Image 1 (spheres, rainbow, N blue to C red):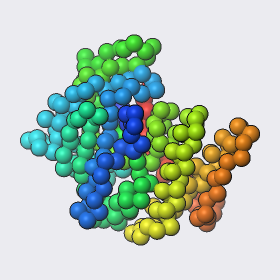
Image 2: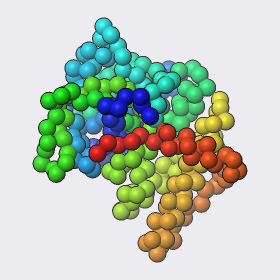
Image 3: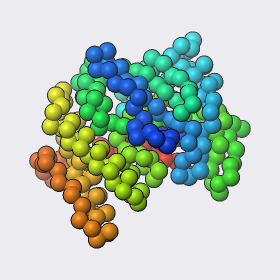
Length: 257
């Protein structure tokens, strides 16, 4: 998918108290400020340590002599969306500032950010030899240095602890509330967004349908009624479904154990 077998991806694990990785969106200046990595330990035990991005930002970041780090859509390396304007490490994690391009895709992505439909971020990176070590978990790593290739806004993460849309990890009322808010944001974007392409709203409609069905399955398993009505019904034929599902599979980052 990414063209480099040694590149791994990792979704952000939000610190306690954060419900979204997006810090700010300014449509007037076409600016997005978002966390794409945190210092939290993920579900397989990996932990990116504070300062792990220092060297890569110095050598490859936007202010370096050879800037190479990009912003991509769902880890699809080509074509990239943009280059980050800034990359900063703070007490929460890696914070990037960038501007979606004034293209059909860029304008659609800005609509999704503005509506709250995009709330997750992810990174693609290498670990230099000798820069990680096993930690107190059975299989997790403490990553002390990483080479950053790109940051991505993602639809949802495959990591079971990604705290926004991981349907398979629903085990509390807070999870249900969070996913319900995500569905509402996506429905609002679908109803009110002004789209430059047909692809984005069609994909969004299909995503809403997938969420609703997953929540219905959860409710059935719990033997409790759960309202999952989608008031915007996607009109999709069988010929539409297969290529869309293929696109979603490509858009979902693969987490390396």
